Image (cartoon, helix red, strand yellow):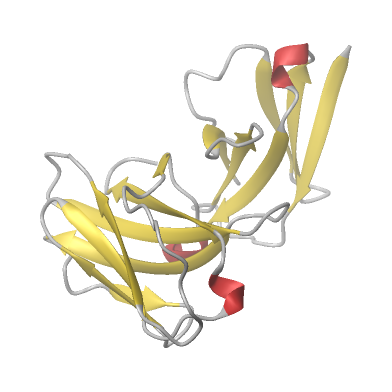
Length: 191
């Protein structure tokens, strides 16, 4: 059987793209494909998958030739040209920081994530995911040639970046911060 998953969008910018991800239980999100609003698709596409753009209904369909191994949670995300902070990225990984002792609300905490790339134009993003919830954007920080760029979703967060790592500092821990945190790297020129 074939399965079709649909994602509605409201943008009219032809430079914007819809990205599809899937997440298996207890795993990080995995990038599948992108399709630009004008119809251009990533190449190659994953096995047994394709994407169709329905411009009239402002919808992108992910078509899967169903297999038991494809049973997962699927996400779509808009990568807007003018608002890169809301988009997800290919290289999402768990930070290397392991919190071994219980933390108390009000305390500060710092998470660290290391990376390797030869590209000089990179952005480093942080996301968090509470149990049974979608990914939530936390912050981004430019590195190397992009070091002047930064944004956070909450003034309790700050993000720093060096040439090989990024840190997320939570100034005043709250119960809502209890989640799995991910870092992501975006090379400019990559999708």
